[in-house]
Each structure stands twice: as structure tokens, then as C-alpha cells.
Length: 171
Image (tube, rainbow, N blue to C red):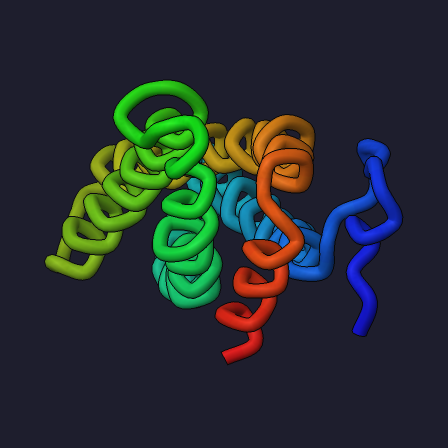
């Protein structure tokens, strides 16, 4: 398997296989997020709140299960690799980790409260706002990763590090 970065400089669109794989996980996650956001809008429109809210709980659980391995690959492998060069306590990595935490906190708060039991229609609308918050955070976050972080990693990481990234992702 050849690595595009072996061809010298890379343009914006060329990512090594490991980074390209991370980026390719965004479109299906984005599609799920759009579905979640649409459900939150339906809950706000008063009709069939109960049915849409129950659907939202199920879809949030599915999304969380799909999002977790993606974030683990970033937090456990990519961010520490990049952190060697640019640090992790401030700057891009700190921002990315903060946004992960914010989105996860919103999702967890929604699930904790939604699964706790009966809530009024007003409370359900309030809870749906937590998912809207996660949607806005992650939409912006994915854009930053695709346009700034992944290209930065492509320029910064050595061929050996990129190969290691791919090796870990394939496990």
C-alpha cells in the first residue's frame, strides 16, 4: 500500500490513508447528525412530541455508539501524535478535545435525563436543545478538522507516524 505523502508535498485534498480514513468517517456521522437535528425541530413543532422524542432517544444512542470509536481514534492516537509537535494544553489540540468534551457532555446529559423517565412536553423540548447544541458543536468541529487539523497533521507527521496511525486504525 503506497502512501501519497511519499510523493513529496501534499495539496489540501491529499491526505495519507489514516487521515483520509478519519475524514471519511465524517459524512455518515454528519448524516446522522442531520437526522437528529431534524427530529429536534419536529419536537419543537408540538405535533407528536412523544413519538418524535422516543425516536430521538434511539437515534442519539445509535449516534453516540458510532461517534465514540471515531473520537477514540482522534483522542487516543492522532491528538497525542500531533501534541508532540504543537502541545496539547493550548492551541488546536486543546480546542478539539474541548469540543469533543462539550458535545459528549450535551449528549450524555440528554440521555441521562431523557431515559430517567417522564418529562413534560416543555421539558422534552428543553432536552432536545442539548442535542441541537451537540449538533452545532460537531458541525463546526468536523469542519475545523477537515479544513485545518487534518491538513496540518498531514504536513506535520512523518511518514512513519502516518503509517503507525493507519496501523492503529486498522486494528
